[in-house]
Amino acid sequence: MKKDLLVVAFVLFIVGWLVTGTKIQSVEEYYLTHIDEITEDSETVTLEIRSDTVLDSMDKLKPGLEKYVEPDGEILKKTEYVLRSGDTAFDLLDRATRHHRIPMEYQGADYNIYNSIYIQGINYLYEFNCGPLSGWMYKVNGEFPSRGVSQYELRDGDEVEFHYTCDLGRDLDGYIRQSKKVGN
Amino acid sequence: MSAFSNFHPILLLVYVTVVLVTMFSSFHPIIVALALIGGILYFFMLHGMRTASKDVVYYFFVFLLIATTYPSYVHNGFTPLFFLNDHAVTLEAVTKGLVLAGAIVATCFWTKSYFEIFTTNKVLAVLTRVSANLGILVSMLWRFIPLFKTKWHEKQMAQRGIGLYKVNSRVEKFRRAFALWRQTLVQTAEFVFVKPDVMKARGYGMTKARTQYRVMRFTKRDGMLTIGLVLFLLYYIGYFSQHQTQYYPEISEQTLGAGHYVIIGLLMFYPFIYEAKESVKWRYLQSKI
Image 1 (cartoon, chains in turn blue, orange):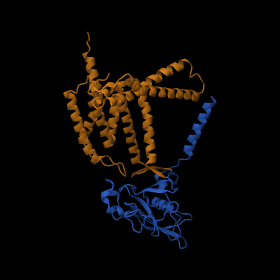
Image 2 (image 1 turned 135 degrees about the vertical axis):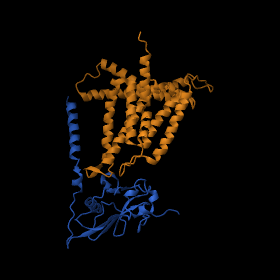
Image 3 (image 1 turned 180 degrees about the vertical axis):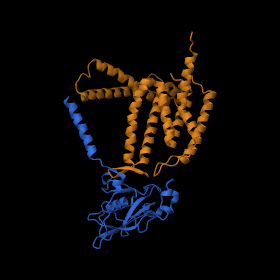
Image 4 (image 1 turned 90 degrees about the vertical axis):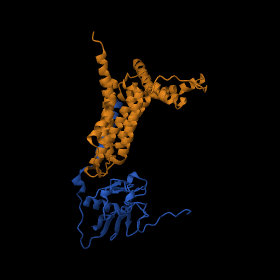
């Protein structure tokens, strides 16, 4: 009988743990975000989300997604946001996409070996949707940082851009391959 | 004994392939539902109300598990219903989860029914033409699960008789049952895999020339049905490779006419209808004197 009670207690513990670890929000609650007013002495950063590369490789795009591609490649035009202290590039993206109701899906930092959040898809455009080498990359002040999106802390005046690539970044301006070419 | 199982084994194999391939290549909610209902109805026909409803209840929980797990992992989709730990649970993902769960459960039921009607002599009849060794091996593997069930039942009865389960704790009961289950598994595996060696030691399969008497004949009816099924499969594979139901970001519009659903429904329900027809015929043929 003692064993039975122990098992019941264990099951209750698991259920309690699951319930307390789950957060359920309605759609309105989730999208309700506060965007700070820009005042004269506030620190600001800009954010832009683009998917131009898809327009050049429409043949590689997964069928059925054509009508979700922005015709001018602009998902979010260059917008200025107030920088809160300790904001990473991901915090900025999360806040802006919630504010503009752009759907965004990411993989949490605990689920990969890089300890950083990984952006899987923005605006119904997901990784691998435009060929096997496609996905989202980000740029700060014209350079591609070699750090994860939730590890990059922003500073005043930074210009953040998110770009969709169909060819591991080689089709984007200013991308330099990190690894040396071996052989020819 | 099932009337449907009297068809030639090759036809039976082609039939189940057509059912499953049509279902998975379309991934269409209605077609998956038809395959699921057809599979369950035939399963009821084979096993009777009482036994079959137990399995249906069990598979209902499997269905629920898959259907609830899927949308908590996939968040793509046009209409968010609510947000779970900052990730969207969308209508599209929920629908796809239901369809996926339906497809898996339908596969389970068709497979279960086929294990019942596709007996080892049918396995031998099909595979001996290809390779005799393969035939004997597959038929032995085929026997594994039914054999395991019988042995498990025997041991359970014997152990219950000598008081293995006479303890108060449920956990302890479960632990003992699990130990017995493991032993049965090992014993059955040994039985199945040692048997071929024994047969070989007796000289079976040592001579090159071996004749086989074939009881099952591939009749004209079987041939016509097989050709019909293959044509059906080719047509619908061609159609669904272009029009497979897409779920993300929006569920694609269905262009299939109602007539197609009737044809596909007839195909999925065929074993059930045939079985029902034969049992009615049997009732009426019985003399009432």
